[in-house]
Length: 194
Length: 194
Image (cartoon, rainbow over all chains, first blue to last red; front, side, top):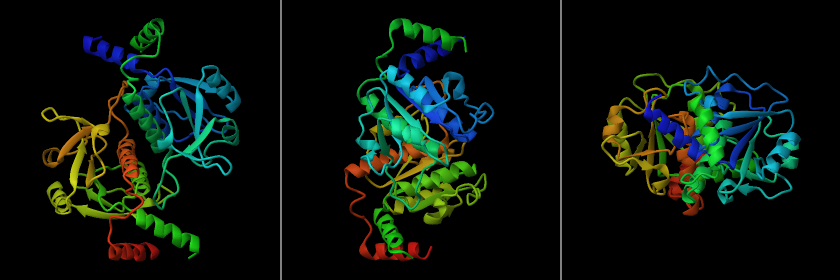
């Protein structure tokens, strides 16, 4: 390993966001999942939660030459309740994007995204499940001013994650790690072995 | 046509951004182009410029059920110079995303995107051409803190356009049209015939 590569990995580890993650619920298109993992890696997400109970998690290895999946830990759950319990244990606020008829629909750009945030994104056709709608802490929308009613899911994910990055940059969240020294060392070793 | 549909079209037309556009240079994957057109429509772009001289503009009709291409005017150019001349006539500032070795690489989030902006995005593998690099007014980067070196191009476009939307919302650019009354009426008629 070159010194340059070691330095790169060290820097990436120090910028991983302890309190930012995404949950993918039955997103099935490998192009979408591949693009989403690349975006997640880019904003400093090291762990992604998967809930796949109506379709299979796609094979992404062959789609993207960028292979972000190598650098992201995937954690699988069979249902929404178990996944959300795990997230709540870690004090995450769970935000999901859908139109609610009873609750206030926040705009993405109204949200404070500098805290402990887990975003949930649903299947290309169905959106998030009723369980997610019932159990998430907050629903929000990405504003749209055109004729088309929806964005590509990998686009929605990226827009949410980059608004989060923008807010976190201002707060200096990429300058100082929220992981402890021991955790950082473990992560570094894990990445160096990849 | 229902009253609801008429109202929707009227609203979309009034929110179209006279001074925001994108240029696609040889982006060849139909999934990408389809996702890009949906994002463009969503942020109020009514006209997209195309420079396709090393590959063909893909057929997007069958990819996306959302068919944003119906609502966006596509203007074709054979080379960068002609396209940029046209944009400059209309007073657009031309911003392109690539890493410059000689000029300052701005971050997307440093840019003021409330003026007359044309973003140029390049081919999936090659990025933007040397002509674009030479002739664009400014180069900038979408910040990335991960292992992977690049984002999917449709993701990059969406992140740029939604930062633009965010800034323009604050400035009230979706509340009051920059098109004149006559232009708005022509646009409305054009959309109603679709």
